[in-house]
Each structure stands twice: as structure tokens, then as C-alpha cells.
Length: 304
Ligand code: EPU
Image (cartoon, rainbow, N blue to C red):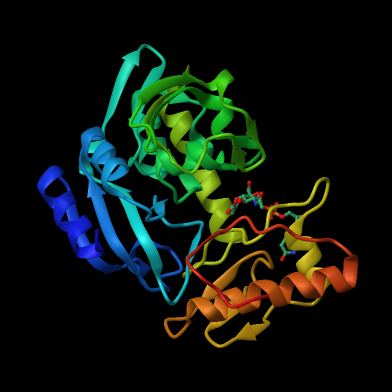
């Protein structure tokens, strides 16, 4: 089937919107990169099942908040999937158990826990991610991460069409990683929290947001570019290597925090990509540390 045929077949099957050659830049925090051949904004688990069945040989990519993603200037030669409004729901399941849909934004969810008088999710207030994306990569801040609060995750496997709910113990979680495969989409899940005075929770959230404003740069970035190496800090190593202010085209290493690359409105994905690997080489030369990118790459990039 041609791309146009796949897009058309999808349109007849799904409730969500299907677009051909849709730019992915607006769906990422870097705001750079080219189009996906097909973009599906899924509005039900059946929509997701349909894309699994109709994809043919096309690769799939799940795009959450796009805050940890660099899309190539040439775009992505596959089907990109975003979870639509139908996945932006929440529900208090039991006294201290909150169910969140995969497309819920973490900062909004954190503010919700303050209103509900629940503690444990404050760290999420400063993470620009969807719940589904955060569960997949075990996003975290201030020494807490999703694995610390998660009870269960609702998953659909696009290769088999099977959906299931897994207990957190059955997912293997590490630092900014999980055992979930590429074809497994997190459509929702539950978190276990503790009761606490609303104003105390709100105050803690304000403290985290203040910390972020003081320690991390504003502008178009993907948060930390590299993972912290064991017992060390990527930001410190990059700073020590003298990379702050280093620029390629419209991409610059932040003066506020060395592990952030900020993209000007003129930046291309190639600028960001080249700067990432220049920083990598600089740190390798200076400290003999092989930094591992935290940001995910989508599409084809120049050879390193
Ligand atoms: N540092 C420098 N120079 C810099 C930046 C940092 O020397 O330019 C030093 C700091 O002085 C500090 C150390 O590096 O001693 C660590 O820096 P920071 O406290 O800013 O934390 P981080 O390890 O860089 C991590 C997460 C962030 C998260 C913060 C707060 C990673 C890779 N990064 O940053 O997560 O917001 O802690 O909890 O784990 C993200 O993952 O995208 C992200 C932003």
C-alpha cells in the first residue's frame, strides 16, 4: 500500500485525525524538524489498534509532549502517533489512588494533586511531559521519578493489538529508562499518593518551579541533553570542558546550565544534532567520559 492508501485506510477506521506530511516541529519543545509521512491523533484504544494493523512496513513513533525529542530536518518516514483529548482524563480511583490518562500533562497533574490534598507528585510540576511519555522513560526530578509513585500502567502493544494493565513491579525501571518496547504505548495508569494539606503541597510545587526558573534556562530546549553518568553530573562535565556559549548555527549551549541546548527561532535540527556531538567530543577529550544522550532522535541524521 502507498502512504496515501495507508492514510486513507486509517481515516476510514479511526475516530482521531489523520494528516499526511504533518510537520512535527510544533509538537516538540525544540520546535525544529520536518514532517512525519502520516500523523495520527488517536482518540481511542481502537484507533491505536487500527494503526498497528494498517502500518504495513512503516516504522511508528509515539510523540508525547515532545520535550525529549529531536526530529530530523528530513522528518520521519513513518507514522507518528499522538494521544488526543480522549486520553487527557483523570479520576480518583480510591482515596489515594489517582488514575491519569496518557496525554495528561504532568504539571497539570501535579497542580491537581495539590487541589485534591495529595502529596508525592510535586516533583512532576516542573517536567514538561505527558503522563504516558513520563511513564515510558521514567522521567524524574529532585531524586524522584515516575517509578516511585506508579502503581500500574495501561499499555497497548501495537504489534499484537493486545491491551493490558501491568503492575509497576512487572516493568523494569532504571534511571530515565524502562523495559517497555517501542511498540508499547502507555495509554494511562495509576499513581499512589498520600494525604497532605493542599497548601503544603502547593507551596512545595512553587518551590520546585522557583528552583527550575533559577537553575534551568527558558527558551526552546529538550531539558537535559545527556544523562548523568554514574556518580557524576553531565552539566558539570560539560561546563568544565568550557562548552557554555558554544554555538552551531541557531543552537547554543546554555550559559545557565551546560547540559541544556537552546534553539533560536533560526535553528535547524542539524544545528542541534551537530552541537550535541561537538559537546560530546569535547567532554570525551577533556574527561574521557562518553556521555549518553537522554534526548531521543527521530529520523535520519548526518553520520557522526
Ligand atoms: N553544574 C555545573 N555547571 C552547569 C550546570 C550544573 O557545574 O552548567 C553542576 C551543579 O552545580 C550541580 C550538578 O552540576 O552540582 C548537577 O546539576 P543540577 O542540580 O542542575 O542537576 P542535573 O543533574 O543537571 C537533574 C536532571 C534534571 C532535573 C534536575 C532537578 C538529569 C540528566 N537531569 O539535573 O532533569 O530537572 O536534576 O532534579 O538527570 C531532564 O531530565 O531533562 C532534566 C531537566
